[in-house]
Image 1: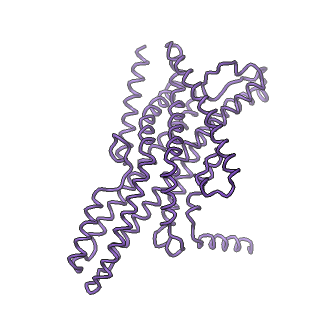
Image 2 (image 1 turned 180 degrees about the vertical axis):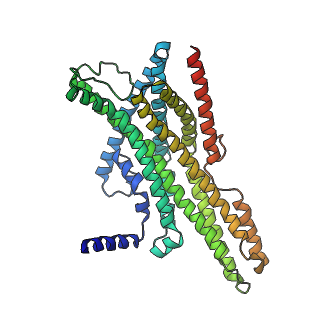
Image 3 (image 1 turned 45 degrees about the vertical axis):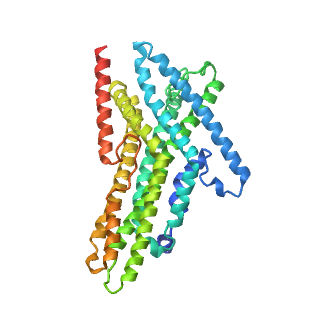
Length: 413
């Protein structure tokens, strides 16, 4: 009983401890480091360790891109004959996933200065004390963020793990427990090699673990870019929400005009800083999200086709892939929609004040704030409207149209 009480007390103390910005960033930072990408390398006091991580990262991506080239060659060879067209359709979603992961990592590297500036500014704005964090309703935002991160991380890692290890696990069970005389040397991904990768056990297992590492790197690069986006948008929405609450709670006392104007000047600067952060997010993510949505439509189409045309075990594997793709698109659209909603709320909260008690100068400044908030903060890929849940419905609709066309064409032949 005493141990139970000590455990409860320690949990209460943990809940009563202020959360740092590093705590919020912990999951994407640690996953990135597992593939050699150190977001905070510019702060590192161990230059040799940072150099080793960078070498590990570049070596991993060179290996990964060689595997992607092998997938592209396999795809090209498969579409030459109608008898092997289903193999091309099977490898197509993996190619799309790999290309998106590649481009996301390229965007992280190319816009590293923007990423550092964005994270530094968010860290500076982060509420430091427990009282401030409660005022910002940070525990609520963090609780939702953690649930989303856990679900998406599980799905993404389940996809890469299943594709990577299922063939070896299946072959091991058949060979060791079911009495099969040969060990089936198969890989989880359809890749062309310029040599016989199954010629001997040692060649097979070296190639197998090489592919597994490439799949893990692709999964983490794909996953962490979105986890980083989730953390950043959560923080920005928290700040927009705090601005709205402060505007609604401001008393607007008529005999304290100077204090009212000082408060509103602070709010306007705060609001402008949040909008600047959103522009940093767009600089960082706009092109990668454009490619993401275009590839997602094709991925969902090809995966759905595999689910309708394959055996039960393949269907189970591809269903995990399908869920991962659909959840990933949904999460980006959900957080884009949340960002629009919380930024629009600023104007509504400003209007809900008792502004009629204040001076003309205050009202004019408030009017400018309301006008500015009518153009909401948003994530905007090039040629796309601002990302929202409407975008998700369009992606799913486009995927179904591609799927119906593919099924009709395949059945006709």
